[in-house]
Image (cartoon, rainbow, N blue to C red; front, side):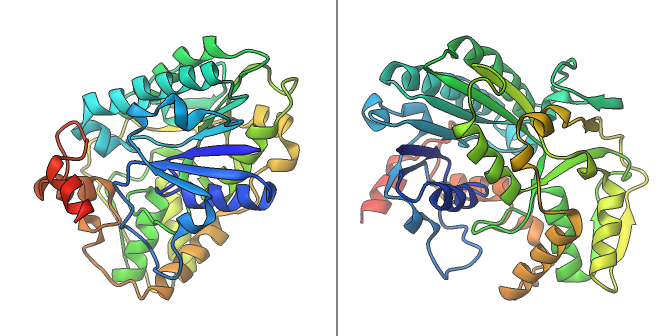
Length: 356
């Protein structure tokens, strides 16, 4: 079996590769990543890419048929990955996340790939506080990132067939410790603030709802999606991935962190404009289809693992929101140093620097 993981050098990718290496020990695992965040390692103990058989440094928008030849399954993680980046690079977000994803799926089908697993997002539900959203609920994407996920699902659905199984995993907001940590995710941000300064600053009034999922449970869901029987959801399946127990208001997430890490103050921005990105989600379908791949890691365990992980690297950066752990900051620095264009392609200067 040959599995290609796009975006394997990001936040979720290393955990996915580790999961797949365990589940498919004889598989050939390929990584494909443009390398924006390759240097943003949480720890230098081991390079995560040691776990793949071949690593391609490639823009997903330019993936060739040759790379895809002989691949049985694709796990498509590569994306401009959050709302701040989507707001700053709106057209590029649609280019990479939507058009790039659809073209990749078309090429995959052309060369005979059997399974295409797409990392989608529950953010496509947008403002939805009145009831928990199911897969049949109206979509209300509020940002470029969320819109790109909606458009991609729409356009890859017609490609699905008995020979080309497509699974769109609408993930909850990710959290947890990985080899390339992100601190621009709500729970990770709160734990980082608690560790570095004994203070959690909530940028909103704390009332928005967020469903969360630990990255290890994301990897387990992807594992299931690769091997799921076509009778479990059909040729095309879009499914919310998470658990009902992980629907939290932001202020409750902060409160949970303060209970685990002693001496932490929590401050709300009571004057903040209402955050329209508020939604609760139903995970009944995922529970029905994947009973053996339900989330195992709870909120308190996730907080403790983040606390331990940050402690292990002696994390104490009170200004972490301007650090390498913030994806938009990394891209901005690469652009300011002449390495990236406005279209988020590598400049000739960057390419020559990498060769020298």
